[in-house]
Image 1 (cartoon, rainbow, N blue to C red):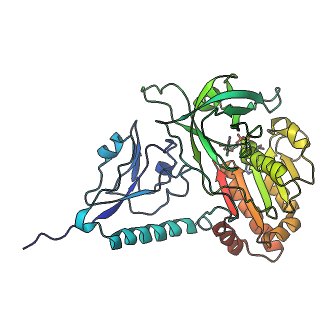
Image 2: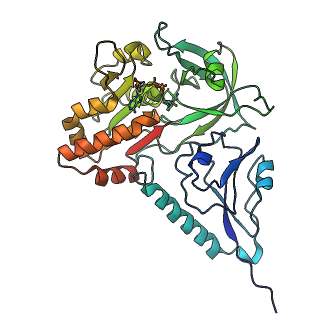
Length: 400
Ligand code: NAP
């Protein structure tokens, strides 16, 4: 009698070359199926129940990898990897039907995973196709610092820097809204290399300076922060290892008639500087509105306060709000959105309106509640509008 045919399983794996070891997936996993050692973050095949809670929060997409296997890779196998293994040849079991079933099941699980967050995120229909994961820790791009400028007042405790990196002859294509990884030099106390940190690109696709093959980052010095202090202390001419680019959905629509509502706090303004530069350079007379809600503690702590004052109202409508100006009421971005509820509700009825939220994690709920209130007050239903916007690539959140 023949031995029963073993059925292959699809194993959830993390790409060690792309993963930046932020451990967000590990925090999100409700059943502790994700763990790490000093080398890699890995998924335990014996525990993973395909709930997909870890997929959406991963900033690089390294979490979204799958292999059909007869025997799952062990934790020890995964800890030892420098790169993902190729899909094995499963012989007779490796049928087209199985591969298709795997695709279908993963797709439906992924779609279900995104339902709770307002639908699966998608790129705007008119956005250009981004390049992603061209450089990794083992094969980084080496950039040179062209400039490092403080963009908050000297007198404040908030040291935020505009850092310009030049890529020389290396190809490093980015679109507005994408991020890059920075590899801080040196090692942790245990001798392992420091983790890579992600920063949004703050310049337009054609460079901080047009066609100069460079880009800008917005970096806040954090007390005890390994990467932020490394970056904020860089001098002109220093070399920096860069990975990425990352991000395939938080992208700017190319459609000049798109209304773009940008909501941010602090350094979450980085991608919106990129959006604004792109509009200014590529479509200065665009009929679509560019609207910015930007929160900081004080004007002196608002990154790019000076340059923002020079952006003409015809290019961008600005709402700069402050939470800690003495003798003034505390104001958050969501408070100002409520004040402008009528105009915002009008925009929400247009399928040309895109909303982007970037910055502190805490802001996400506040902004969501403000949009729900605005809709309620003006006869709309945010619970219906939000998933439609999200699925059509018109609602984007990037908060940490
Ligand atoms: P921050 O200076 O700490 O805060 C900016 C403002 O947000 C303050 O006025 C703060 O008010 C207010 N705020 C606090 N809680 C809020 C809430 N629940 N709703 C609305 N506003 C709130 O900001 P930051 O340190 O620059 O942080 C920016 C965030 O953006 C970080 O989490 C960073 O990781 C993220 N980010 C950075 C980049 C980048 O490229 N650098 C890209 C994307 C995202 P009070 O403090 O007075 O309460």
